[in-house]
Each structure stands twice: as structure tokens, then as C-alpha cells.
Length: 369
Image: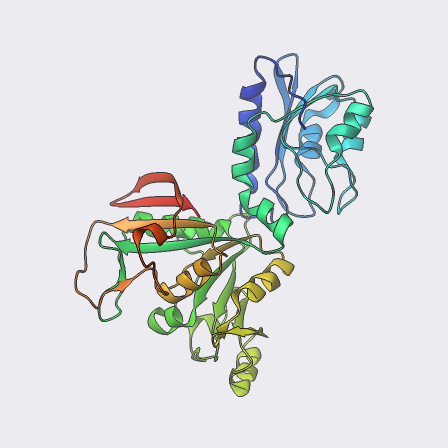
């Protein structure tokens, strides 16, 4: 349980720490986003954030920027300071060594492999510690990491670009472009924040996508891993995903074409065989493999079949739906979600809307499943 004892001004300093934490998005994984602010005499003397795995933690960065003023200061940090030896030494010991007097954190560390303990250890050493300030915001910021450390599989976002009548392609399969340029730029920002982008073989055959970050600067972020679910290895050898660019993984089943697999591997594509369900790639097994590779945040840009399979398997966590001000009409235009379908409104899958914003000429609707 948190010990909550907050002072005037604490909230503003924690908000600053939360904003700093966001600077690590796209580069900090598989670690969480963490920001820290050091304050002394009501004045900010240092700040930092966790920029990349293996790099200094936010608390250490903040103390480094504060120089010789750390002793007697208050630390505001978005995640409970670590009390274990990982790639870097425990932050708790560094805080004690530098003489931090008070620590205020937002979210306790729920990682089962480290068992938290930083707050309790600091209290035992005489440091005043308060937790739970703006905890909901800190939890929301790291919802992907929290799922990852507790389940071993990535946080899955289904990204959809559809018309106002819910279609992702016209009757002839044409889908470029449904949304406007600002929405497409937003998608590239989402890719930059993701660890991997997953699509299905149907989308590859229809659109020959690159799944790369192009319309925004990559900055410190890593190019997302490109992933394809292709049960029989129908991907053409001339496909963009099979010819250079960021690393590509294709998940397939035992029924795949072995010669095609060899040819793909010669092109630098990693082909991984997993089990099958109803003659399709076992998605849970594929996601566990991605989790073992350090994929925390998985963005799905796929068609109705893969979207439905992820949702029906309970593997999807979030939807990000771009709605364009146009309609296709007709019975042949393709919906964004396939599968068996609900038998009645009472059996429909539900989610909770969390955001609705205008992006250029389109709207972006986000919801949690």
C-alpha cells in the first residue's frame, strides 16, 4: 500500500516528471517510461528520463543534471525507484548516497521479477516516501509495459483506417487512400512508438506495404520490427517486406513451403514456424515469441481476418480507428472486422472509448477492449 502525504506543489512537479517520461517513448522498451524531477527550496535543480534500455535510469539522470545540489532535495519520479541489480545498479542506493531527503512517486513497480521494494527500503533508511500521486496517469502511460511484465506478451493495438460506413477497402480491394495526409502522418508516429508492426498475408498480397517509419523523423527510436502472419508462406519473393529495410519476421505453420522459407532466409527474412489453429498461425504462440524478443508494444495494421482472430483470441487490448468523411457503400466493400460475428447486440464485443480527436479531415477514435 502507498503512504500518501503530499504537499502543495507536489502535483505540478509530478506532472513535469510525467511529461519528461514521454520523451522515452519509442526507445525505452522493453523498460518502462520513467521521468524524474529533483526539487530543492521550491526550485527545480535537476531532471531526467529513461531514454533507452541499458542507459541510466531517470533518477540517475536527474541527479547528474543537478550536480552538487542533490543533498536535502525531494525527488519526484513516475515509477517507484528500483531496488534491484539489473543492467544498472539499484537507484535506491544512489539516492541514499547522494542524500535525497524525500521521494514522491506515482506508480508502484508491479514487475513480478523484481518485486518492487524500493519504497520500503528507502523508508527503512530514514527517507520520507509518499506514493500514488497521479497514479492513474502513470499507469496509463505504461499500460503496455505493465501487460508485458505480467503476461510475457506484447500490448496489442489494432489500427484501422475506415470510411464512415465502416469499410477498409472498396469492393475491388482498393484502399489507398481512405484517410488524409495528417492521419497518415499520425500512423507513422504510432509506428515510431511501437516495437513491432504486424500485418497479415492478405494485406501483403493486396497492398505490398513497407511498414516503415517514413513521414516523421525516427529520432532516437528504433525502427519497428516488421512481422507477418503467413500460414503457408504465400508472400511473394519480390514483396517489399522481403527485400531490405528493417528486420522482418514471418510466422508460419508446419504446412508452409520449405523452399520458399529457404529463399526468404537468403534475403535476410527470419521465418519462424509456430503451431496452427484452424490452419492458421497460432497467434498466442507468435506473440509469446515476440515477447521473448523484447516486443512490448505491437501495432497491428491488418485486414478483417487477422483483426478478428486477435480479438476473438482475447489478445487485442486497444483499438485506434481513423474514420474518414467518405462512404463506399455496396455489399462488396470490406469491413474492418471479420470472424464469426455477434448473434445479437447483447453478444457484441464491447470496449471503452478513451479518446476522440480530429486529425486533419478525419477523426481518431481510441478505445480499450
